[in-house]
Amino acid sequence: MTFDLRTIYAITAVACMVLGLLQGAAYFTGRFERWLAWWSASNILVGIGSFCIALRGMAPDFITVHLGNVMTIAGCVLLAAAMRIFVGRTVNLSRCCLLIAILSMPLVFVFDAPGESLERLAYGSAIYCLLDLAVAREAYRLARDEKLHSAKLAVGLFVLTAAVFASRSVMAGTGILGDGNLFSSSNAVHAWMALSAMVFLMLRSMVIMLMAAERTGAQLKAAAHCDPLTGVLNRSGLVRSFASLPSKPVAALVVDIDYFKQLNDTHGHAMGDEVLRAFASSAAREIHAGDLIARYGGDEFVIVLKERSLEQAVEAAEHIRLAFTASLGRLNQPLSVLPTLSIGAAAEASGAADLEALLHKADQALYARKRQGRNGVDAFRDNILAA
Image 1 (tube, rainbow, N blue to C red):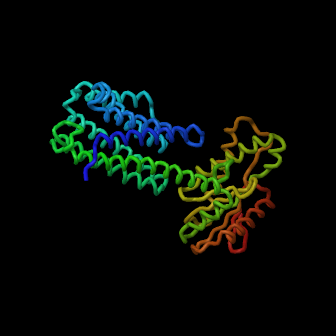
Image 2 (tube, rainbow, N blue to C red):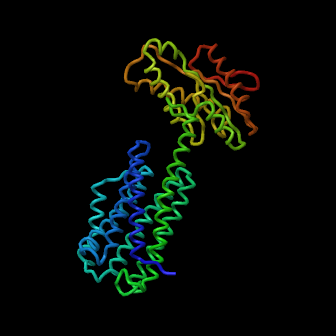
Image 3 (cartoon, rainbow, N blue to C red):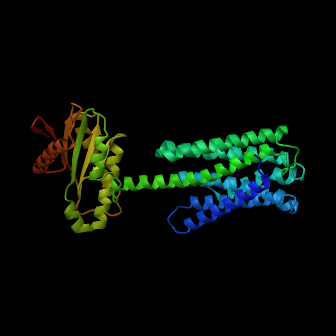
């Protein structure tokens, strides 16, 4: 069974332009970030380029050779840019335009004769291969950093299409794809490759939406377990994260910000919020990677320290207390009510810690610290509280 290559180009053009317009309409709803606008522009440009190429022999060479190939190059560059934006990397529009101009020069000034379609095909396919590999690289980073399963699918698809373009470049360069007449009836191999490329093009556009949906779901799940004011875990997030910790020795700190109500009454709730954020950021700098910090109540925080003895937990608590005091001096205004930290520490060396029981012990140490004058650290040891 053979396929008409011109028809495949025309169908690809229509599919890309419709898809691009739909993506553009979705972007203007305000529910998506600007990567979708770039992806939309990419599909529209590839569609315009494919349509111009489909007119080869029926329209001037400027449209079917120069404009068609330049639009296709531009669309593929914007595709790579869209993925970079999706990953969170910066993209400079001026540099994108410069790259498009540089990559298009050989198609406009070197392989510009109508009979040099194989040369254009070999060069263009090599460029598309490299750009697809660039997209696959960004998708790999996304899969590694954000653990998105759909990003792994994107890596596979873009590597596969890169292989198709590489094969087409080699075949065009060696003359396997015919005699230079793009739409020759004997060009069955090229038609099959173009058909497969069209299918992969649609699949790639679908997988980016899958990545967006998966990322949104992950962000919503993370938001449900985080305190919106301080950015640390909330109570449910702490319980969930603690359950996933390995069975190893663990210590817990229950931290209460002293004089917080007086601070709010004197300086207002906005300053109170600043103090909460100051504590969260200073504490986060003092703990190790993999340790947990959560806002457990209004001005109460819980810190879980992995593989730490009680003595090490007390030492860490002192560092946190001093770091918090230092952070207050960096606030926008001086405080007439100076908050301090009362901290209770407890540890479980057996590796079979129960969060509720561990926090109960740390709570007892905290209340003992409160009774002794606040602004310090007490530890729970074998039912005996030690300061």
